[in-house]
Length: 226
Ligand SMILES: Cc1ncc(COP(=O)(O)O)c(C=O)c1O
Image (tube, rainbow, N blue to C red; front, side, top):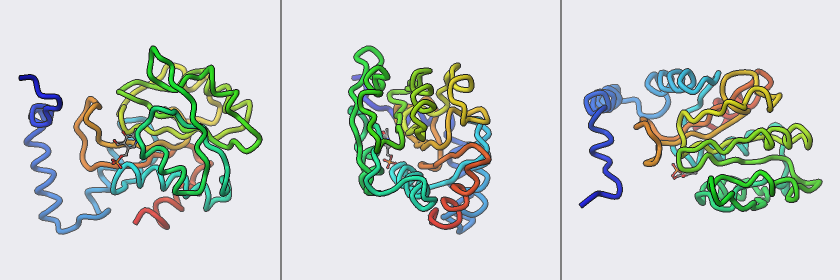
């Protein structure tokens, strides 16, 4: 019988390393934030080519925190519309609705199963403030056209990367002018997920780019991370 999801086999390659890390954390008696989280945040930010990573309890929290930080900064407001893929995991949508923002669903491309970028512009209204792309099934959802739409309509681009750790796009830097380092956009969520190629510990983390987002980091990390 072929197992649908063989987590033991996936973890085996890194077994000793994972067990050592778990032991180190439990023996330290420090389970939230602290040195282990700090080291993880630094290593993960380096891995994906981002300036900062902020550890969270789970993927939904990380996504919620991104929207909440933008609201606290006064960039997003109650009732603002966020374009989302219609076929994503429920957490992507809950992060939007929990913050009293309005998800606007866009159907996927039948070939790639990622949000269909040709359908996005017709979903944009005067209340649209952001596009939440979700890199589904290990693939990068970003396209040049999405970057172009963000610039044209002055929209935030937020990534839910729960399912595609380390995914990359050759297009990123040229087509989205707000990026100023190696990762695609301003903020994205990463989460340990069975479809991703790597086994990671701990689970959720929100990552942010761009010096102009320093305030976002301050609010996320020091005010609401806990
Ligand atoms: C695309 C996507 N976003 C967000 C999440 C939420 O992560 P968590 O289950 O850690 O809250 C998941 C979880 O599977 C997911 O697949």
